[in-house]
Amino acid sequence: MNFKDYLKSLGISDNQHLIIHSSYKKIKAEFNPVSPEEVIDELKNLVTKSGSIVFPTFTYCFKKSSCDYEIFDRANSKSKVGLISETFRLSRDVIRTSSPTHSFALWGKITEDINETNSPESPLGKESVLEWLTNTLNSFVLMLGTNFSSLTYGHYLEVAAKVPWYDYSPWGYMNVLPIGVSIEGEQQLKEIPGCAKSFINFEKYLLEKNLIRQHNFGQLSSYFISIGLLYQEGLNYFKENYKELLCPAGTCPACDSRRRKFL
Image 1: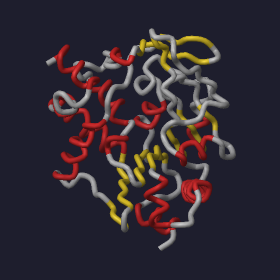
Image 2: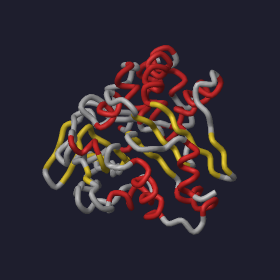
Image 3: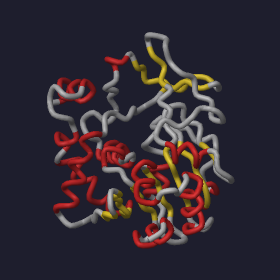
Image 4: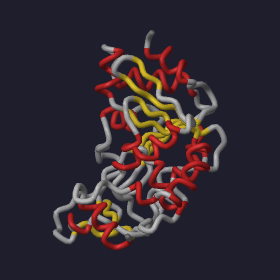
């Protein structure tokens, strides 16, 4: 099976709107010598411009009280969330949003509604790319070699479900302030995404209820999940099981700060 056929077997086709999380290392292990550029070309060819492709290109350019922080440059700041993400950012007809902390690279239909200036006070909440996907039919999360610890959409669910800490920053121990910094200036942020490691408990819940399926091909495990399903199931899960979204006590300073304040 080649990589294109693999994507087809997952259900990828035209008119879909995809947000993608990927591990190039795991893709390459099964489809060597496929390059990051070839991965992107196959995705574009299948989805076509009647659909959309979205990659997180996060840089986490927060202001810090310690004054040692990076300044976001939309054109030049490299994505810190993977090689394919960075390669996609630089590929043809892709635009990048302007959030200093949580920018996205966009291609296709979505660029008719969201442009480079998008930089909401809630980077992954209201008025964000994730809200557009939530409100757009035929939207999906595609995970290639990753699990729910990289599920960006989980942060949208935290805000939508108003978990106790949805507007609380857990990064004080790293001197992080609720301010994004770019070459355009500073931006006060309303909600700051926290630790996502325990989103895997939401993953286990969906698997146990047979609501999602893990597709395994050699060393490569993938998910192709409707955002409508994630939203519907996630709202209830996050409201009722928010304690399960925290890492075990003593293992994560960010989650421990949430636990001390809210539990």
